[in-house]
Length: 205
Image 1 (cartoon, rainbow, N blue to C red):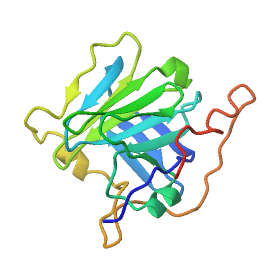
Image 2 (spheres, rainbow, N blue to C red; image 1 turned 90 degrees about the vertical axis):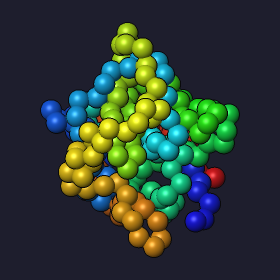
Image 3 (cartoon, rainbow, N blue to C red; image 1 turned 60 degrees about the horizontal axis):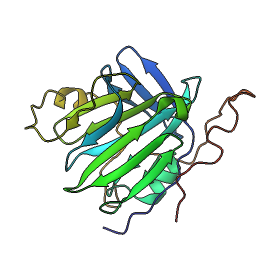
């Protein structure tokens, strides 16, 4: 496996549905994160071995940016084509994913996401998953204390919903995992909200 680098995100489509959060990538492929997200306030900590995907919507809640945290499976080129960003953190490192949203690498290969939706000017979601479970969270001020996920024995309750996805953000092959083509999606911005992702915090190296 080659080295994985930070990849800046591009604008992707977002649809908030009754059955979950749908993300449309630049090749028009759609992934549905099933279920109503659990509300958390401040910080969410994911245990070892968990994939963490962070989605920040724009004020219209129809588009946003998706960032994978410490993803080591997907080739840079595939991420760039799909519009998904990535940050790779060393132990003890902290990085801003977006204004108001920060990722930290904790001891024991844990990942902490801190978010303030008011600063982000949109809704902030975190999707935490592994081979057996799939969990969705939304950062909301005043919600219950943020949980630590991934330390308990997996129950497998989310396995069915994971298998039910019509499209995955990753597809295993010899070159790596991922999605995408370089087809661009149109974004609609108002004067008040223009520029909300014009200067992404995450820069490729």
